[in-house]
Figure 1 (cartoon, one colour):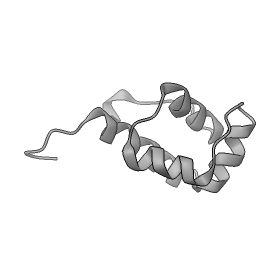
Figure 2 (figure 1 turned 60 degrees about the horizontal axis):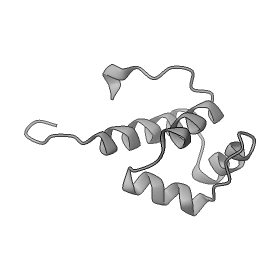
Figure 3 (figure 1 turned 90 degrees about the vertical axis):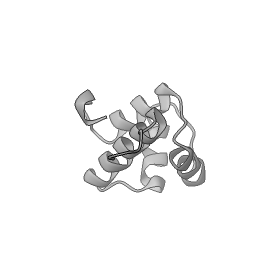
Figure 4 (figure 1 turned 135 degrees about the horizontal axis):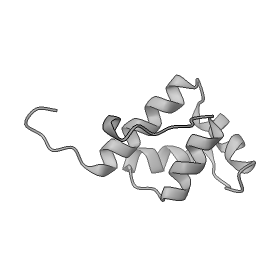
Length: 77
């Protein structure tokens, strides 16, 4: 990222997308898993949130929990 400041929105969405890929979970799968954590999301709503990069911390944390991510190394953000 030389020469360009990375926003927190970009950092958060890149991290979450990378974790989804690492867990081999697509947006439809994530929507199903989030139901078990009390969040009603659709594949489209997840895609919109991740394309914008603006989402609540509750969505971020629930998504990571739903895919089995147990740590968030801040140095990677």
